[in-house]
Amino acid sequence: MPFDESVLFVFMLAAFLGFELIKRVSPLLHTPLMSLTNAISAIAVVGAIVITGEKDTSSLSRALGFIAVTASTINLVSGFLITDRMLKMFRKRDREKP
Image (tube, rainbow, N blue to C red):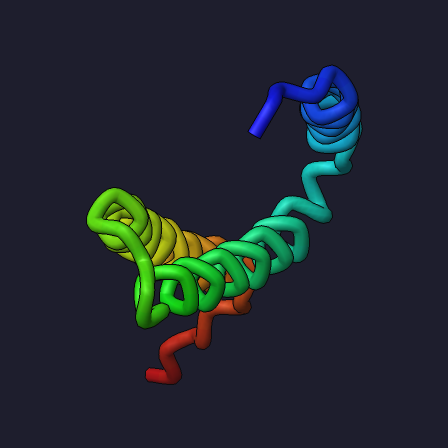
């Protein structure tokens, strides 16, 4: 597969726009944004499982698919744990009644 310059251009444009978007997000929106990235990571897990589980894949594809499943799953679980912890910070604490 020959290298196509348009692929590099799209990657650079996406990286720049993603950086600018994240940089300009209000702190109040970080929790919903993190939840969205968790959903994107879940899609990556499903895609990696599909690639790894195909019948006629090479050993390299299976190894890379396994690494992708592992990394995406770790990212997904830790993202949900961090989001849950952030949401707990905004909950009102119950006052103890004497």
